[in-house]
Image (cartoon, rainbow, N blue to C red):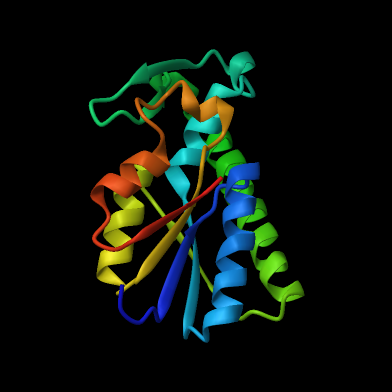
Length: 170
């Protein structure tokens, strides 16, 4: 496998991703690696917020897009609603990222946090390749709310498309 200098963990706040973060920190601690990056994909949160019926009272229609990511489509008259939804999502991403930062701080680990946008597996693989990541750590499953949105889990897709080894934490 060669030297590992940069490890990236996919983190979405789910139990699976928390285990992945724990494992990534343990590997990082033992190996004397230079960099640990926690990557959170923003779009996943949009889907999750929409799927968990937090927007049910907003008259939201969820329709599939070609790339498998579901987008919430709303009439133009509800512009204000769209803005509110976006704020909810932003807040949610901030909260999730804060959890990861706190977990690293309590271990005395100085890690980077990246918020990526797009289809989760693609965004993670693209970032990993462009940033010289040597090992990607992913949880075994994402949010239950997301599961029904994706054919095949995010972790499976990352394994399939990654340029480097992937550790799937069960």
